[in-house]
Structure formats: structure tokens, C-alpha cells
Length: 473
Ligand code: HEM
Image (cartoon, rainbow, N blue to C red; front, side, top):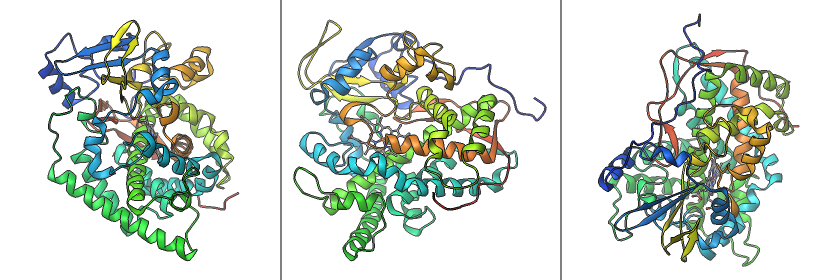
């Protein structure tokens, strides 16, 4: 192309090479540590189920939609979250909803769910909009056509959304800055869910936390403690803003009447920061990359955003007009599900597809493989947001699309994320044109969230001056 960028539409979006042939257990662990995705064999893109046997352990990766439905929805309580997942996350998350099971989890869920119900989205929408305005402003000095590392930008805006919606504070506030810096350090030391969560090691195998992990976890929890402490005082004084944390801290469990204790609230805020930030950041970064490589979709979206978001007013109803943006965000999460695998444990003996599954076996649901399954999706490796209007796309959306998981443990932030993602994408694409630089191709890797191993660099140029902040309607 004349401007030194290239049209990559003809190329398929990057997918890590699959492992070739069989490997020893030791080599599997080694590959796994490097990247969960490329450690897997290619046949998982075609198999309905795959069994892995180790001297200590058996694990079953399930791609059969009926099995996925059984494990996540129909008999979810017979397949609790694996105890292994707690290990890596405990220093930061304590007893948070993400890692709890049984009655403790049900109690937490009864308090948290109402904060994310449909009506609440309207309340937090202006905060999302403000984050979008701030992101467009932040990118202004970088939009001169030179490469911008986009994952750090999407990480920044996703954290800003969380701070504004939870605590009515922008990320520029002092505590938010300190917490964000500590989160970045923590994730470098201990990514969202650690490798031990999916590695089929026996439970007695020792797991260690680095000193850095423990220290950053303590710092983050201390900062969250300050935020929740301030908020508790504001609630008592009747001066608290109507945001997510006020809602969660004042909602009693409808069955027991109990509200969250201080420590419990710290656990929950920690998971909101972690689960709500890294996942949205990854999805946004991949969506922008895919738009840069598919300019026809980018133009469609920019056109849609110009109409839906004009004349610079914060209309909640604008969301329903962002149809292309929603499809693009959905398709980006099909190809790059931010959480590529979930782990459950069989609480009792089972028979899966005629095979005996022992109690305690590890059950793996893999959106990464399910979303690209060759026997389910048409043209599974192609980027085509229009697929969701086809019979195959509609059917797969129902039975083979689980970026937010499904059933009782479905992500409580899914509606929030499906508002945040399309809105931010539209605001960004309305303000800037995104291009890929010659020769730059990200390599997807997963340490439980799917990021690019070599970063995602995009060239930005302005389309028109960024949206002005205006009134809520
Ligand atoms: C694109 C954005 C997001 C994606 C793809 C995503 C995905 C997921 C997935 C797959 C799970 C289940 C994991 C498992 O079963 O092992 C989950 C759980 C959870 N997510 Fe999200 N999430 C997103 C955004 C958010 C946001 C914005 C919040 C809150 C602010 C949030 C809060 C949570 C919580 C609290 C859980 C634990 C629920 C439970 O175990 O009952 N997520 N998320």
C-alpha cells in the first residue's frame, strides 16, 4: 500500500503453531510453562474430547457442546472449580468469589449479581463514556502514524473503567495510580491464573509464591482496604456516590441478611480489578488489531460510530445502535477468548462419551479450541463478524461460544463487558484510523489470558477531533 502499511485481509489472524506429535510429560510441562496454547496438539481443533493421562492425574478436555453444557450448566455443582486454581490466586484474592465454592460462593454471588443487573448498566454507562473520552485524549499525542504499543493502552483504559464504575474515581487519582502500578507488577510476577491451575500435577506437589508476588498482593490489598474503608465511612455519612462499590457494600444477602465484611469486600474488589481489567484489555487489543488488518470492517464501524455517537451526547440507547461494533467485539473474543481455558474437577465418577472418568479428574473447557472447532464453525480461523447473522454463526453462538463461561458461574460482568467493549471500540475508531505496520504480526500466547507474546503495535492517525464531553440523556 502507498502509505507503507499493508492490507492483511488475505492473511488469517495469527494462531500459535500446535505441538507436533507426542511429547514426554517433562517436555509437556516445559512447553506448557512457555505457552498453554502451543503446548497443545492440533487434533484438539477437531476432537470432541481428549483424555490426558499422567502418572498422577487424568484430565479431559471437552469440546462436545453437550458435555460443555453438562459441566457448566446442567450439573454445574458436580463439577466445582478445581482447588488448584485457588493456589496461585490466594495471596491476592483471599476468599473471593472467583475461587470460592459451595455456600460461600452462593452467598457472594447473591450480593454481587444485583450490582451487574441490566438496570445498573445505565447508571455506570456515563463512567464508561468518560473513560472512552479520556482514552481518546490520551492517544492524541501518539496519533502521528508511528507505532503505538496498543495492549498497554487498552490495559490503561480498562483499568480506568473499573475505577470509575466501582469507585467513581478516574485512574489519575493517587490511590488508583498506586493500585494500577502494583497490579502491573503483580501480573508480571503472577499472571491472572497461574500455570499450576491447569497443569495436571498432584495436589501435594509444592507450589511457591515468589516474594514479589506476596509483596505486590499485600500492597494491592492495602490500597483496596483504603478505598473500601473510605467508602464505608461515606456510606455511613450518607455521602456515598451511587456506583458499583456502594451498591455491593449496601446489598444484603437476600437469604441471610448479611452484608460483606471489610475483608470480604477487599477480596471481591481485588477480583473485579483483576478479572474485569485484564480480560477487557486483552479483548480490546485483539479487536483493534483485527480491525487494523480488516479495513473494510474498520470503515463500517467508524461510519456506524459517527451516526450512533453523534452529536457527542452520552446516550445509553446508543449502545443498541452499535451493531457492527458488537459483532466485531464478539468475533474478536471468538478468535482470542481472553480466558482460553477453565478448569473444573469431577466431584463423582462419570462416564463421558463412553469413557470412565474417575472422581477428582480434571475437566477442561477450552473456549480457545471450541471457538475454532473445525467440525462446528464454518471457516473457523477467519475473521468475519458477519458470521453471527448466518445460520451457522447463530447456532454456534448458542452452543459453542463461551468467552464468559456459562451456567451459574458465568461471568457476572458479561453484560458490563459487552457494553464497555463495543462502546470503547467505537469511540476509538471514530477518532482514529488504526493500521498495522509492515512486517508486524502478533503471536498469541496464553498464561491464562490470551495476549500477544511480542506485543501489538498499531499506527494511529486522526479521523476527526475526539468526542467532547457532554450531558447524559
Ligand atoms: C471481556 C471481558 C471479560 C471476560 C472475557 C470475562 C470472562 C470471565 C470468565 C470466562 C469467567 C469464568 C472463569 C472460570 O469459570 O474459570 C469469569 C468470571 C468472573 N468475572 Fe469476568 N470476564 C470479563 C469481564 C469482567 C468484568 C468487567 C468483571 C467485573 C467488573 C468481571 C468479573 C468476574 C467475576 C467476579 C468472576 C467470578 C464469577 C464466579 O466465579 O462466580 N469479569 N469472567
